Length: 349
Image: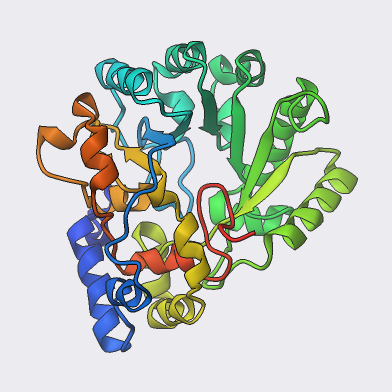
């Protein structure tokens, strides 16, 4: 499957996606997210600090998943340069940021990935890597990634849509489930997911259709039971996330006739208790070309924090960033539905 960009699809353009998000508000009589926050006294939404720097090191990926909000794939060429990675390191050195969260695409396909990880760990910060698991088998030079991750004590976070091949392969491609289990065995073999090893392997579940996730705790127990009993693999925690109505999932919603009903579902499930814990309030997102965003989803919609070089990682201004107003749009209902959704799973425990 080609990326939306390679298909010259209209939804590869962030402006068109934002237009559709605004149109559905009018046609389905959905309260704009900004107005919803105003009624509760949360607008403008403000940061609580910057604890996590989430860095998208490129849109190149060995998979083309149907729900991917990045529109990543083998045909994407955007890769963060060594110069921009060095600017990210300098920002971490000078800011007091405690966690670096590396994402993509497949982050490991960035030629500077291992160097960057080593530099981050030498700074003493927590390093998380969002590994799609199958990248380990995409080329022989990636076969030793489990040992590399273990050596540098990286927290590995991996998407696994479900604990069987049918639902996983429908979303991520044929053979992905089998390869993912094989990769988990390699990670388990070096200590990941094992008690007392200190090596953390977390999985990410997102629904395979136009519905919201059920409870994280219940799903985690189901995943652990089935994956251990049927495939002899273990992991630490399961994060449940909500599919955002952007990019490829937006395309699915429109073509399947679920667009308005899905937005209505998100609005109906709005939970004010999630607002205090939204990831945009303590996380800063960096795009492959170094620009700053409130979150990964705003990044894909090109909703930059500000204009010009002032809002580039090379000019990190913590005073300004801590005083900024977080940009919101209708997709934000995805993070505030039910128990909430973030890159770390449910917001309300």
